[in-house]
Image (cartoon, rainbow, N blue to C red; front, side, top):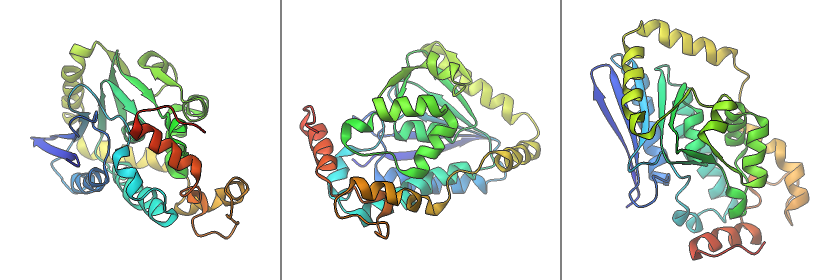
Length: 274
């Protein structure tokens, strides 16, 4: 099963649910495409006043569906398309949505989960939630625009710890770095997220949409679409055969032995040998 992204509307409230059984709701390619379609639809739904994003089975999202990775990640062009079109397409649709978005975060919130949560306006988490982006164990970096998004949301220090040391943080740390709006007992999370969404939905919807537009305009812009090129010279030094004019720019690591080993080790359930 490739997983799915469900949308359910109830009056002025919309629930968006990440659902990938057996994989802690890890995002598949199909799910990224569905996420974009769902939020583009919400943006044009005049009745929508608040969105709650949640996962099923006691987890938010454990990252990407690594089982899919060998089929495309080792080709620079396919890798670039995945990150710049499929992943960023879903994230950009969330960022462009003028309807307030509440993240209801339980259990694992890793990698793609942190990225999706970073696109939400308010973030509530259960006390047992855990956060990180330990992809250094998989032998690849976070894509440039995704890294910019996460660093803006969690702060530079926490982002560096996640990406460079594969640190995993508890909800209290994420509240202290201002990523979380509130920490709740796990048993109360869904109820309180619903209550918050109802409170938002009862307020002036036009004001909410205009406030989101204003906040978006005031925030420091995320890295532009061509930001991958900015990393080219540095990556060329690290990747054999890469040059400053390489097409794949920030994705030139695609066919590297380190990248292959990290993913193979995860799928083989063994420690990587970097």
